[in-house]
Length: 491
Image 1 (tube, one colour):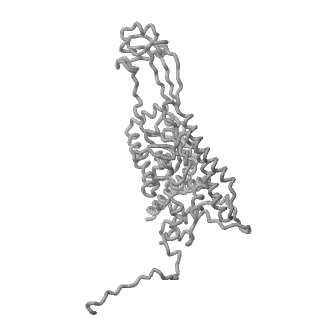
Image 2: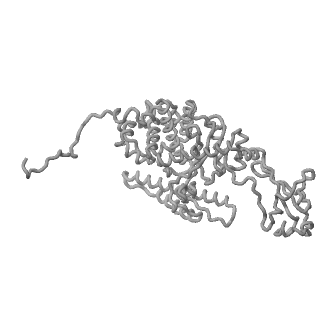
Image 3: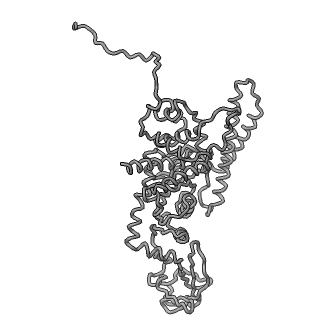
């Protein structure tokens, strides 16, 4: 070789067209997750997904994609953090597992997007079938469940929230736009599809604005005080509500409620709520578990947001042993200016006369009983106005009481037996130990959904569609856990 000779490299020709044999079965290994998803779907009854199919043998019509394929695509897609129908369509062209599932074909994103939200009842049935398999293999025991919620951001922008008068203005303009489009005639046949799409988009905008106006009026009707801020709703997803998120932000979101079986951290129930607070969700979650699996769990554990008097009594009525945190069950409220020596605990009850006796020996008669939610009874006792006015200790007992009707009042709270038993139980070391196990179980699926499945924002709009998307994600989670647990059992 001479010193001035140029080095020689292997040429790369990207302009050539090459025909090469392709064995589709060799695209993915035998133990690939896509094969596991396809296999387990073959064990399930998917007939409910075919209820609306119009293309049948012997009649005209275009062939449709098999429900088993579309279900497998979404489950596998969510397992890889793909929640976009357009991205799914794009990856069908090159991702090995998706190519194996589709047999080298590409499924249109419209088909994928519509299928995800159009089969709510069938999807619920599929979720229950998977739970039945998990229960049959004793991976779900219902000996103990946890209930916990997480906020998932809605597919809306904060700037789409408007007040009622603004929504009415947009609605009026949108309706006028629809009328104008309906009057227009399409001059050329090639433009008919575009004109139809514009009219459809205009009608959908009118529908979204009408939903937003209804939601604003509903929120306005629920306002407790006139000084509350004016109600707003999104013009793209009227059912989304501003909620505090895990990053301490405030964003349009939905409250996703998960009920998790403690044995193997499998999700036995999922629901999507517009209510930011968790306080009303415990009993509905227990009812859904019974509907899905035929029985209530033996124990339920939840944090203080769920622990209300109604929840404790309701769980007791359902024979569910409930464990939760309670702020200060024995605390008492002392009115402004009242000396601690004359607080409610300083008054003694005389059961025979149904009267309270104050520290100075005066008697307070029973004036009424208030029935509160959850079985709480509040008995109110009041002293005679003239007696309190002449009492030398008035400045310590009722300094702010103008006494227009009576003197000092004291209330006696009679808690339901279920609550009394609950407080006694939660003082034991065993109950505290059970409650300490809540977080590792309840928060595990939330972390999995958000970190591994990348489910931090919804793709669908509206509470019903958000509920369907939550079912897809939880179904994916349960199958991933199932595959992992069965592998561990066989090794």
